[in-house]
Image 1 (tube, rainbow, N blue to C red):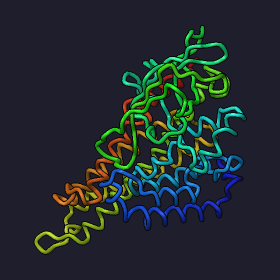
Image 2 (cartoon, rainbow, N blue to C red):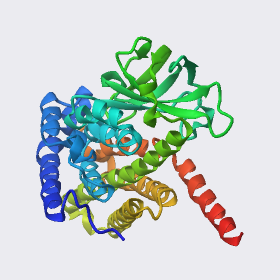
Image 3 (cartoon, helix red, strand yellow):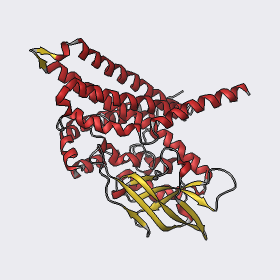
Image 4 (tube, rainbow, N blue to C red):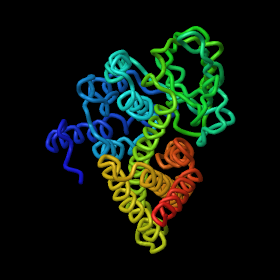
Length: 392
């Protein structure tokens, strides 16, 4: 049973959440068009985010973060999803899939080396898993880490790596050579961006989420010492890192709910003010039906994301529930954004209208940190395995 976060009591968190909500809606939302057209997050918004502790809100207080747990993280995600997703992307990896690998499974030395900088925003982390032939399923991973004395030589290429052009630290997945006798043979390494042999490509041109920076990263004969291996262990720490990925899926579900709420709010505001033939379009029953579908999806998604977060924190379900939350909430957000464009009619197709950007931004949510198809395999396969285990 979830009994709250002892490090961040409910009243303290309520104040934190209010500050973030106010910042998003009064400081970031008015500059969404600027972010989109310049394809960059303004420096003053980045500085303010760092001062508020957003680069380390999910990092423990002992390392300089705010110490929020996943139940609280989801509430933050719902607020951050209300605006340009690239704003959240700026510090999302520090708190999420990269930072949580260190928080949960790094050695004390690794934590001391990297977490304070991540929490302060002085260090930007990138999660280097995806490759041209290995995305949601790491089975096709080709990047290798070859034993060399007491260290390793890493060779390979990664693709679509968030924050790669700004990264100070890469959390790199690589296949061990020689391969161990058992297990996947994949381990996780901490590689400084200044290490010789690390090469970052040009910033990708994407469909949406302007302002976030992704790029290819190449590791050519990159030598790291034994301290680079997360947790000082190979196979066990790889499985642990996959647990962190499941945690990130719940965060993405929260983001999707925030996006859907924004789509709904924009739709309701437009339906209440725009007219056709002198009649507000919100009086038309088919428009009301679209608003009803959006509202229903938001309510269901919000409840599911919160429940998945609770189950994760209590340890009751760290596999099926995260995938179910990400699957439903991201698909729901896509539908909500599509309906928002439909409610706006031709205006919704115009670049300066918020729902046009939102429509493009949310499409990526169904792809990264495991596609919808992968989530269905995780859910379905998990249910079947559980039934077989119970029967046995």
